[in-house]
Image 1: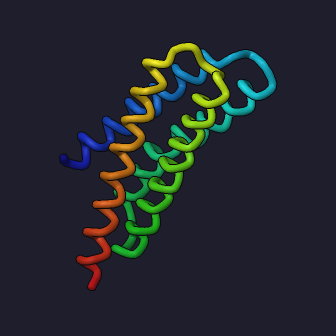
Image 2: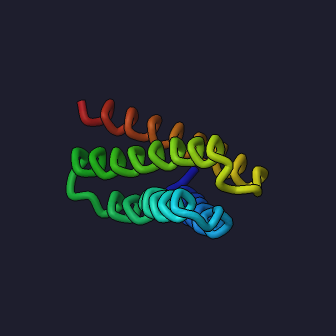
Length: 119
């Protein structure tokens, strides 16, 4: 997968999260987690853009690590949303969880490769 394909996937993921968050129950928990997941779910796309302009390999690894951290946060948030029954569209929730998990794997691998290239 090239840089542009990954960026497009992250943008699609961010859009999926926004659309899903708009379907949450309109109550305190739903509103809170909608805001939280929108922040963490859109952050990887934005931070990936920054990683592409990293000033060094160490800076790249750091910025990619931020993307990974936000993806993991989003994944856990999706699991909380599922457990708390805050959304009735379980198909979209499952798709978002699967994509988050795949993106996490991609970033773990990319960071590992960048670290080995640093040595």
